[in-house]
Image (cartoon, rainbow, N blue to C red; front, side, top):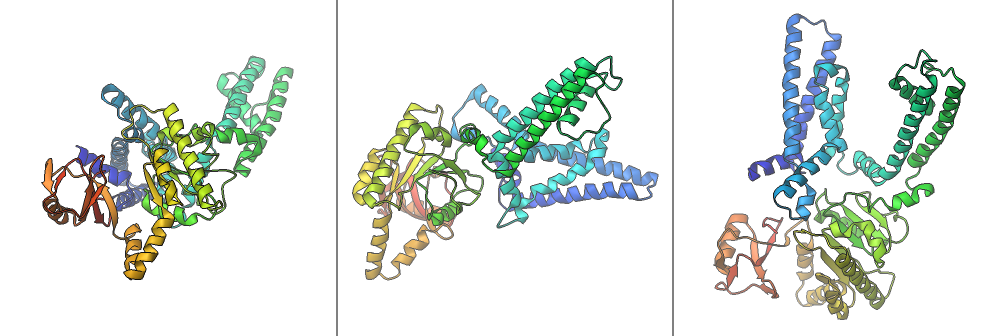
Length: 494
């Protein structure tokens, strides 16, 4: 069952060839259905043609219904990747997260596609073309739909505020209009008529199909007109400015109230580190959210692929914005505008602040603790960062100078290490493989992994010990050991 679900997940939610060709097939069916709709409107149809079109509609309805159900069934709730639930709680999360998934814009488009096949809603069959918007992979380098979706997502609290104001004023105005106009106005004999009049007046459309006749009704209409002007101004501010000053406080709560899960947080980013972001983009999955946290407004060079959170990671009261308890990991970058000692001191303080914050805001049922990797400019400060709770420290200056020094004695080694560190070619990976039993010799395991996955085993790491690189063939490796191998991609479970 899990293998079957994985297959459908790759087809409906993945980023590979299976997903690509699934979308191609679905969009071809959409074009066929719309072609049948156009043919029905303009062709001189016989009774046999109508029967064939009806059968085509029924077939497409079944296909799209099955496709929508499989898309929901194969969906993997992100919350379960982060938290360990069992029994009824796990079932509750599965149901609730799938309901939330059905309310996402792309999924709502799928549901509209299915609904448009119902006989009672044949008039909205043109909505099927909305499914073509899902096929955004046509935009390989710059995706306008993704940027639009991110802009709407990052500012959704402002839009919620605008629509809430519209809803409240429509309800209050419609209710008041009904109370004042009922039995006096022949055009208003139900709440639906009153709410329609309030909405039309509030949006300044003014069809004129319903006009108040009482004095109080006209007073309500005048108030709705003024409220409509305010509502238009509010929406103009939201749409015209990404971060309107009047809504800055609402925007500050955006990251805190968002639904980011298993995301990565980068602290200490500053202008000039664009190369790091480009390399990071190649290493992480396309669906993984990366939050950049730093002072001031979003730097110009930051791609829309990343979410910018304004704040100081050295202050605990601002770490809530990045939803750290729900994050998969944190990256600490040393500020280049300071001296190495000052930069490392800033990084160490940030690490202590983050660990203190996580201790005060624990998240129960996590599968594994938050992983923190940090850069250090002066190797003497490495131990301080490890003491601060950093899981892995990268000595960038020492690493670079070591490569230069070794290249003088062994020409070509610097280029080789650069190749191994790059994502595009062979690189180091870590993982587990328990399929060969509880214990096996290093030599036998190397041969079997080479044959099975075409990877090169270079060592292992046992819990509590340092890495063992290129051990003797008779050294025994346990199934719980972390394997270190060279490969073109991740092939072992982590």
